[in-house]
Image: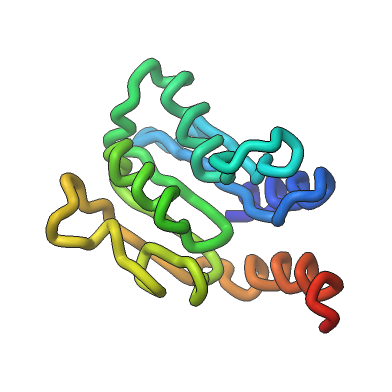
Length: 145
């Protein structure tokens, strides 16, 4: 998660929401890294998780990321949770919960939906305070707090 937080800092430097993600292989190697690039690339799908999943697929030469773990600083949204399920990751580990758009237990629970084609393990709240602080620090000036 510390590496994901470092990636989140890079996103913030580019003007994006500070979210970072990693994909870790079954052997424990980092095979994908990502941070939000929506602002930099003008890409609505430029979420950290999607960037990391794409990089992992390229590194492994497969779209099925079986045995891999997606680590992300914020609970994935519906798009990112869906992408992780479709990529067949074994688990999703995230830091801060997202009560507005989270799709791994907060607002929706796509990975554990009984209709899902694949059901990864979900672990939330890892380094939760640090991950939440990065977001509060970013959004505070934008919201007048």
